[in-house]
Length: 442
Ligand SMILES: Cc1cc2nc3c(=O)[nH]c(=O)nc-3n(C[C@H](O)[C@H](O)[C@H](O)COP(=O)(O)OP(=O)(O)OC[C@H]3O[C@@H](n4cnc5c(N)ncnc54)[C@H](O)[C@@H]3O)c2cc1C
Image 1 (cartoon, rainbow, N blue to C red):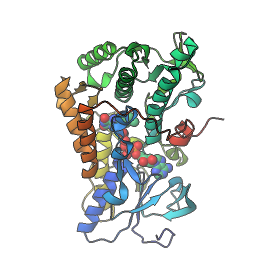
Image 2 (image 1 turned 60 degrees about the vertical axis):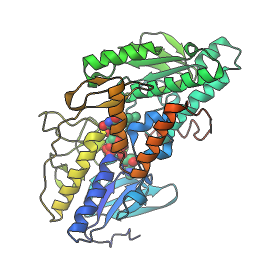
Image 3 (image 1 turned 180 degrees about the vertical axis):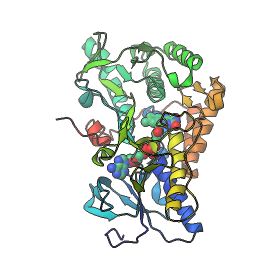
Image 4 (image 1 turned 180 degrees about the horizontal axis):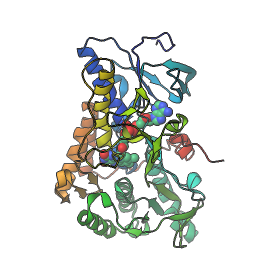
């Protein structure tokens, strides 16, 4: 692969293969092909797949196989040159970037246009023990680990003599009651219920605790649906403590901000995100941990540099004075605008501003229940479940993955979830520094 400096003067390098980078690469290739330009499009990504993150709670709950939520870049983007590695440092003056990989030598790559779409990582707070003992939900490793950790602890609890330790093994704490944390706890509860039913255990012996500093669960769906979610989760035996968070963690217990102590071996931290670490190496203006761009997704004073998705603070033209929230819905649409505007900067077509009115959320909350507010319509229960599953199945950008996901849902309608423990991910592999590359604090 021609990765040296003497490359085509029209090389476009895209950093990150998530919703924004993947969509940008796909659309840009189409635009370039129809303009009959041989501009090279290079996609730099640590993984050779695009991860459909909204279904990670289903992976953690053992409903969907992790392969089904990963879209092979080689299959989906045949015209793109894929460089599997991580953009480590970016030299804006010389228009180069360093790419490192665990599997090969470091490379320097030159670019004529740079598209920064490295997404986000879990936002960690200064809570003692958090980085060591909690795990996030942004990667396949983290989702798989949470499933295996829950099953392993349940299995170990069955021949544990010490009642305190048994209780800790049978307790799961999830911090963060916005949609991702709430979906996660609903799926883990369903997995634990399946386990209890098949192993003759009382479901109520397995405790789930959901914490958030906010006054409501999932405030993003509005008060009415939020109340409904609270009611349903409580009916399932999930202990929800609002205006409460973690003060401290050890390997066997958590201390809450109200000073109560809860013995627990499994803690998930799903409280929000901040821009990918590589962004802070750029010395460019940031807002809320995201790179500041204008409405055409360009970086000020660097007209050849573009950014979008969770990595970028994009002005929300539908709500002046705010930036677009970090969602797949925005990242995908920003990917399309990135492609158009990069092409325009190369003399193909005209640049457009990014403007998209939020279409609402769909949130799958385990067996028989979901909430959704598409176009302001408030849905819960079975109708929301149908909309949610149909939306995600349709939104996954490859037919073979859609097929596999539909089959998994169909299988789950008639059989309980598989409980086998494959032991694929170690606690270290799922840690924030290894799986999300969040630098450890000294
Ligand atoms: C559990 C969960 C559920 C969610 N559910 C929903 C939902 O239902 N609806 C919704 O709209 N949104 C949802 N989101 C949010 C959504 O996933 C994000 O907003 C979306 O993924 C952002 O897309 P992106 O392309 O900006 O970043 P990402 O999809 O995160 O992709 C970024 C990519 O860049 C790569 N990368 C990072 N650093 C580098 C580097 N230095 N060099 C090269 N590559 C790099 C990463 O490995 C990754 O592949 C959910 C998120 C989570 C975690």
